[in-house]
Amino acid sequence: MKGKKVGMVSVGLTKFMRRAKETPKELAYYSAKMALDNAGITRKDVDGVIIGSAPDAFDGVHQKHEYLTDGSGGFNLPTMRGYVGGGTGVFSPIQGWYSVASGMNDVVLITTEEKMSTIQPSAQAGFLTIFDNMIERNLGPNLVWIFALEMKRYMEKHGIPKEHIASVSVKNKGNALDHPSAMLGQKLTIEQVMNSEVLADPVHLLDISPVADGAVSFVMMSEDKIKEFGIPLDQVAWVDGVGWNVDTTIWTNRDLYYPKYVEKAAKQAYNMAGQKDHSPETLRKWLSFAEPYDPFNYKELHHLEGLQLFGKGEAPRAAFEGVTARDSDFPVTPSGGLLGVGNPIAAAAGMKAAEVYLQLTGQAGKRQIPKDVTRGLAQAWGDLMQVGTVLVMKGGQVQ
Amino acid sequence: MELRGTKLSNDEFLNKVLSVTYYPELDYAWATGVAITKFLNGLKEGVIYGTKCNECSRVVCPPRMFCEECHTPMNEYVELPQTGIINTFSLAYIRTDATRRDKAEIPAVIDIDGTTISPSGFLHLINEDTPHDKVKVNAKVKAVWKSPEERKGDITDIKYFDIMED
Ligand SMILES: [Zn+2]
Image (cartoon, rainbow over the protein chains, first blue to last red):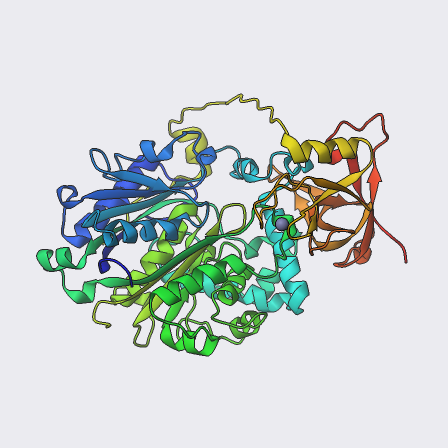
């Protein structure tokens, strides 16, 4: 690991909701304040602020970093916004890491926020602005098309039965019943997922995560500051490795069945953590659990393969057979994920990074994985469909 | 700790709380650049262009004015066949604005013949009157054009792709 040792010492979350009464700033204030309170510090202790939020088109307010500054606690401080679409929520704590690891800041407050309910009548029209503007938009695409095309290619390449993919919706929406932020925790059967409305075959309604409003914040600090504030190590998760990677935007010139950019981001993070053996069996022992990005059920599986946690085409069967259940060998998305907790874009991936912290520090409540957890991974995906961001953290007592 | 956030139902949002509305009118006109202008002018003439990189020898579609791999100029335009295969597709019942249609549109990635990497092509539509059991990954397709008078240098100058019978 390069640079100064950096720990995450607290998180703050709002509820995730289809429509929040609060403004984006107010949501950011809720989660930022909660993260500060949970760390036992105030805004006066903060050296730098990082804001993560996805397309401005949803808000109709341009330059959201500026708009969100007050709520995120960032005025009169070195404040920056990183933005890699859906990958943002994991990228923001990565930015927190390098701003502390570099020695620039000692204490950073990071907020990921999204309010998708403002755009009328639905967020879909806002998504259109991320498509190629010369040769795609005039075909009248919908964001779901992209996922359907990728899911179809993935299924076709490996001969994956839809039931195996549907099992991820059942697992994640079930896990979300235990998450206090969740908007869509529910007990479902594979049949219910399979029989839900077809939006763009093979994508059905229950394959998709719900658009949402919400915010998630973190406090990250240098090791010296953690000692100075007297924060106990069982409240700390150390950053072990980070990686990110972006593939070409000419997405019709890539084979969508496999996310190479996730592989590259993951290997960067594993190597940084000193983990040079990237075989799935080794990595599933080295990591206690994973929170891969699951805006659609197949994406969790697609990402598990990109992350090298399962071989190509092998994740769907493993999920169907229960290997990735919260009480099983290799828990995946114990939080309930975007599918169950909700998908306020940047905040959704922020929630996944927060889950890694909460699990490693034993604060996950009813969601706590029933085994020793020493190391976890959060991953997000975004831009139009070609960025991967990976964060690996380990428990405060883990060497 | 109690999590905060005030949920509003649709009815509350529309009828019971204040909201300020705004209908932006933003018109854009994008210059289509060097390579896509060549591509779109080609469509107007009923031709599908790709480009060849003189460094890595890849022939790709849509054309670009630089090779994203070699980061060197890509200025040899190649006329490609009007055929290809379906790399992947969907039967889509949802429009851009999330409203539903009864009959599926069939968006697909068309892997254009004559390119040297796979896939290499573009997003387009398969004829929506095609029986769904004929639409398959790897099915051979050919471009169906609008009439020359209707074509204007746009991706929609190709009406759709039709499945080729063996
Ligand atoms: Zn080249």
